[in-house]
Image (cartoon, rainbow, N blue to C red):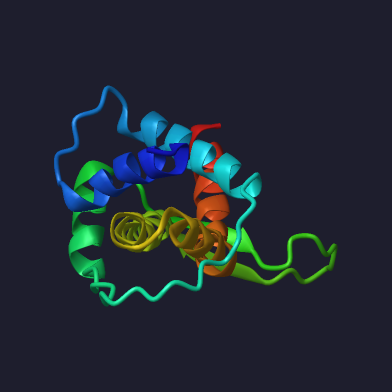
Length: 152
């Protein structure tokens, strides 16, 4: 099992189980996401055009979110600035939700976990890289920033 798979397996438990056993849920999820992000940033992929017949299942966002809320009852809303790389007098402030960020990441990683279990490793890694780039990475970065700000 690759490091990516190990990270994904543990991260997804927080969305599948409402009572994850951990010495410190918050510190553990932070470490897992940092490790996953490191793997993503250093991953080189190659597309596998194999014919995979099974259709990917749909994972229920609402049940994932409910479990995330149970595992992280202190997580909540936060503010963020869009286009933070631009220094402008009237920055556009948006509201984010740490529970939503983590729930979206977990839902995406459940899809990737399914890919690892039902297609080829090559294809699953390509899907992971793609999913991170188009969706999960922003949630992950926002979530890690939220934790940093929350904990000082």
